[in-house]
Structures are given as C-alpha cells and as structure tokens.
Length: 197
Figure (tube, rainbow, N blue to C red):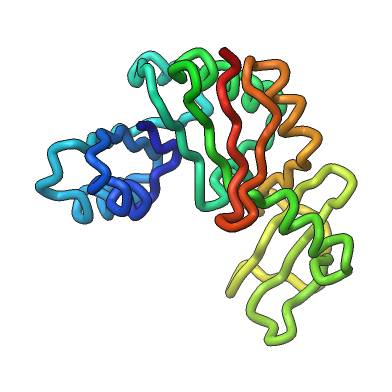
C-alpha cells in the first residue's frame, strides 16, 4: 500500500497490524522524522522523501499497489489541474485490478460549509485565524498568528493556498485517468476511486 503525503505516519501505524506493507512518502522533513519515530522497528513500512506531485519522483515507488491513500486533506495541496491529472493517471497505472485510491471526502464537507455561509473571507470569532476564500476558483488561504492582516482580504505572496476540489472535478480526473467515479463512504468521510478493470 502507498500513502501519499504520509505526514507523521499515523495512518500507516494504524494499518500496519493488518499485515500489509506500506510505502509512505512526504516531502516535509519534520513530518518524515515524526513518521520514522512512530514506525521505528516496523519492518513492513518504508518512508521516501518525495513530493508525490513531482513526476521526477514517480519511478521511486513502482507498485503495483492494492491501495493508495491520500488523507488528511493532503489532496487540497494539489492546486494545478495538470499535476492532478498526472497523479491520478500515475496511480491508476500502478493499482492492481480492483485496487483503490482513497481521498478524504472534503468536497462534500467543505463546499457545504461555504454554501451555508459558515466559511467566508474574514477573521475567526476569537481573532486567531483569518481566512481568504476565492469561491470562484475554489482556493483558500488560512492565516494564523503573525500572518493575520485584517486589512488585506486578498491572497498575498506569503499565503499557503489550498484548493477546494469539487466532486465534479474529481470525477473528471477519475474518468480521464482510468479510475471509476468516486464512491462516497459516508461513515468514514472518504471517497474511493476503484481502478477500472
């Protein structure tokens, strides 16, 4: 199994007792260090320093895989359509028949908050965070602490952007890459993309 953007390895650690072998990759040094500490002594887990959106790294984890995970809202860090298509296509090619790509079901959850008016540009009630939202492009930036600039309600150079992918956009990615349309798992807030046989 492959965990794209494995962070501190918590998902891998939770699933290792199933007997599966895992490859976790993350480009964040501190996250990988935390994962190494968490997974110390576990033989069926390997960690790789890599950005899963960079095709130069794809040859480092060939597969085939039964399961590819991208959890913790990590997919929201993929901003570019072309990079997203490349990753979906690469994953589809390396999944065994019947294998799945699994993402958090953030499109349903977060777009529902936007449509209800609960998510919008501005400061949080306690003043600890500021959100900048471009609903048209599906982009959001969160500013905390010293990053907050209440006089600036547009994206600035220092903002870390996230993309609020829609379910329709994810369906289109699946269709173009050889994966089935996502199946929503409401109990676990996940989207399952099965490889087409």
